Length: 110
Length: 111
Image (cartoon, rainbow over all chains, first blue to last red; front, side, top):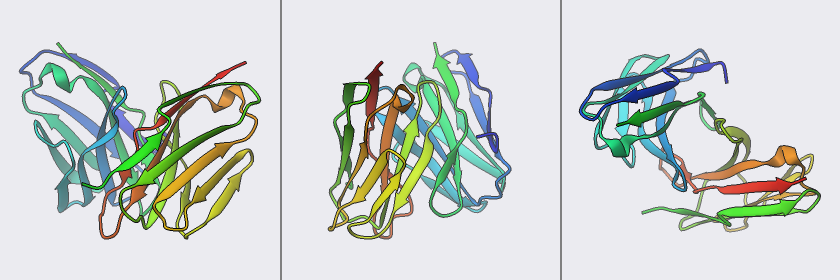
């Protein structure tokens, strides 16, 4: 959905590096989410934010941090990347129900 | 913790055959959503069910929410190659503010 953008779309990095994934939305939604997807494991929630001052851990927040810079922007950071963080990362937004997903960032940690 | 189990994990059908995926929750849900993810794509919302026993149709897709609001199903009649992808259910339980996702059912359709 062009209303939710993620940068970069692909990233290869090395173990120990700090990396930031960015998400922007033009839908005017207060709620934003970060998920990771691994084959066979579905979508797992990393962090979610219901407004700029409301940020919450999801089920797999260890090794990740987030920043909600504005209503429209929600960034995910890997402080010290490790190989098992290699995955497809999705940002999503919602008003109340339906979630709108960005195109995803494919991250590889060597 | 709260879980949503989704079966089957994979389904391979011939074009024209029907397909059904099921979701079962360990707890009562206030609503359930269904999403489709095409290969190489991102999840896209299909529908939300809220009422006990609710049935909704979208062309060849039929969605049901169980009477106890603990289970749901998605049925596709006469599958087409355009139906290929992974179908996810995701439920909202009680006062929980985040969706609980099933692991998805991957559908392959032979032309």
